[in-house]
Image (cartoon, rainbow, N blue to C red; front, side, top):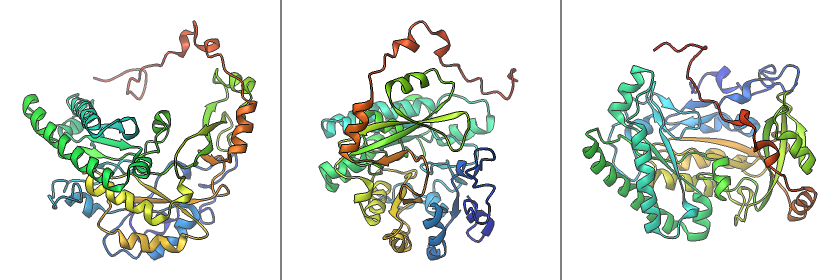
Length: 389
């Protein structure tokens, strides 16, 4: 997060000003893509000054710290509980003090048969998040903050597709009742555990690959690829699965950022009613504001994709219209030419069928049966081979 008048900061992803940071040369790759850069905005910010930069590379994003510090859900009165908040996590779904942890857990709306089923799921999701706050870390400063705030982030995913199939009145009802149910659980279980009630309990994280596993649209976003798309996933060239992907006929490319990495493209049939390209910028920011009002008392991670040719002119008006209704927002100009080897590339049903027709079934036992070195290694959370306790 940087100052709104810091010219160097807001141009960090401008290749004309900082070519080395934004290089696509595999021999001398840039590193600018590894950061998410937002300015500290205030109500009344002149958003028009940043539109050209946003249309070029999607940045800067905007964080309204005054809203984050003074409000939980936007449906509730200002409470000022988060006056110590100094920023957010990299995807901006959690308002955080310096040294504080996120404690995220996710609920998939598309897996529920009824509202009662959803409310019961929230009980177990909440209990997981609350339990994690009981565990000490290696940092005493962090422990003190976690014990005081007990901040958790019970997140929803599949919001956009749920709204498309059930309608906005239903999503508002589920969010509002769900939030109140979690608050009721927190009151009861905090007393039972002899700890403080959580300062904040809900959020909407970006999700992404986790949502794909259950067939959900990611977080508050519409499906990036539409009904049919290629999902790009990166693997190390020495990964034991790479020869299986090649033998099975998957589309594979060398990663333009890393000489030791390959990009494998997986054809996906999502079944979603609409893709992000079919949804206007105003509808996207409106759904994010709905989640911030009725569900999340932390933040909502939202990246507003927009058509570079037809919707750039709407970026500033959309921000002005929703000032005070969001805690953070970022943007992404749409178009395959903008980002090489992007995570989602929309394809036609005919192209999908061609990809599927070339792919053979993989026998996973070839790498998993009797291979001990595939077991995940535990993280020591140390800077070297020894831990200082």
